[in-house]
Amino acid sequence: MPLWLILLTLVCLAGCRTDMHVQPRYNPLAASSFFSDGRSARPLLPGTVARDHLRANELLYEGTVNGQPATTFPFPITRQDLERGQERFNIFCSPCHGRLGDGNGMIVARGLRRPPSYQIDRLRNAPLGHFFDVITNGYGAMYSYASRVPPEDRWRIIAYIRALQLSQQANFADLPEKDRQMLEGLKTR
Image 1 (tube, rainbow, N blue to C red):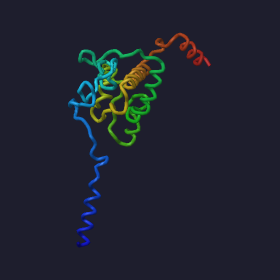
Image 2: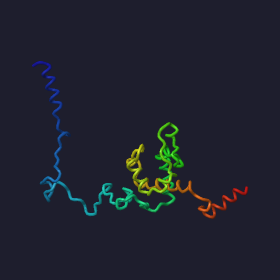
Image 3: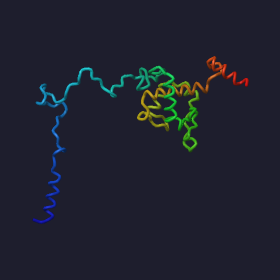
Image 4: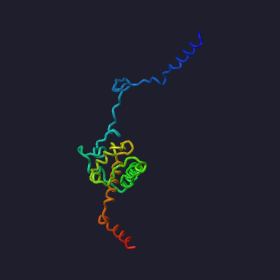
């Protein structure tokens, strides 16, 4: 027998393993004699709840109420939420929008397109759901952050954006009495 035929036979036989390549399995919803009820698919345990698939809270996950952009937050905003929003804003938003939300981030210094300032009337008057939609789906040159920023953090970033907008439009009379007294004390020095 020629040597090439022996080598070809050995190569073919080496590829004939079925130990892990072909495993017995049932097709979904196929009949089975293994379980007493005759089904291959096992019923869910009582009280089982789907995880990460059921996003029934339209406000939290879509930023809308009855299909319209939301005007309220889906949860109460605390100081910790604002701090987390500031942290996420500084990581994801400030490279383009700047730390003050004025649109003068590092990308502008590198010669790229300037994003709008959060202080323009259109964005100061925009509903909260508008910001959620833009963060989730992107807008213009801005791409989607849905895969990078969880929905709860998107709302925290929006709360921080509102805080930035308020900080740039605040009057002395808007400050709490304690802060006004402290600033007046600094003026007299």
